[in-house]
Amino acid sequence: MQSISENLGQVIREIDDATAKCGRARGTVDLLAVSKTKPVECVQEAIDAGQREFGENYIQEGVEKVQYFAGSEHAADLKWHLIGPIQSNKTKQVAEHFDWVHTIDRIKIARRLNEQRPKNMAPLNILIQVNTSGEESKSGTGFDEVRELAKEVATLPNLVLRGLMTIPEPEDDHRKQLEAFAPLSALFKEMQAQYPHFDTLSMGMSGDMAAAIESGSTMVRIGTAIFGARNYGSAN
Image 1 (cartoon, one colour):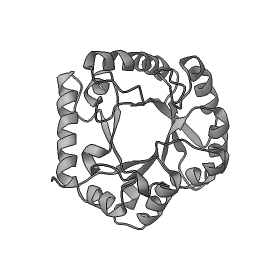
Image 2 (cartoon, helix red, strand yellow):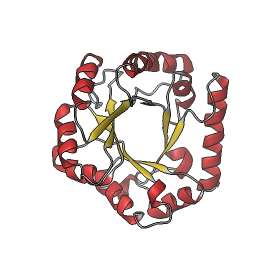
Image 3 (cartoon, one colour):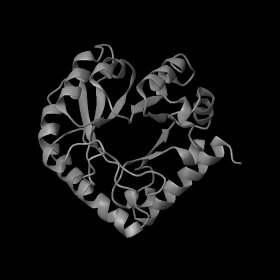
Image 4 (cartoon, helix red, strand yellow):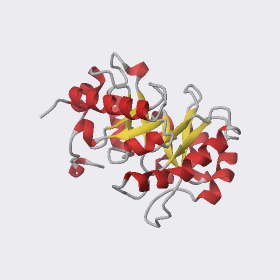
């Protein structure tokens, strides 16, 4: 069994290979290590190996990790991303602890985060989640609503609109993966011209990372390939 450090190295090589293969510059794709359900010891091992950006799905678990590492050697460099859904009664915890939120799909939540973001913290980085596959069971705003939601989020002073995120329907075929990513990639490029800080397209996980990078993703979310299988019994 490989260590987390070795796994990270392998994933980074795969990102570099995929980036080079489609003619993109090295370093244009960020790796978000999805550490949900993993203990702080595993996160620490990833930090020791040089990883600085972590994604959490569960708010309470994420807050506990943020607090645990707040006094650590690399605390100032760590970036914590919430990549799970947010209920209205949990926005204060998110606003007070996270650096990024990937899952904004309605203005009500964005407004609450804006109001509850502490004044001594940098503005909260926001991605709008788009439901590209049209699945009713999946979170995210529809394509028709993205532009209007972005316009409203961009007016909130304690938030910074950084881009778009999606979790498409799982697909093994590379060509079909490209087809699934294409509409969001096109929308991202269109919206970049409107918003000054719009620089992040978060799409791609272990099974479709190469296609996502080929489609213009600037951030891939990788969990199991780094930390191993998840223990959902520990999630909260």
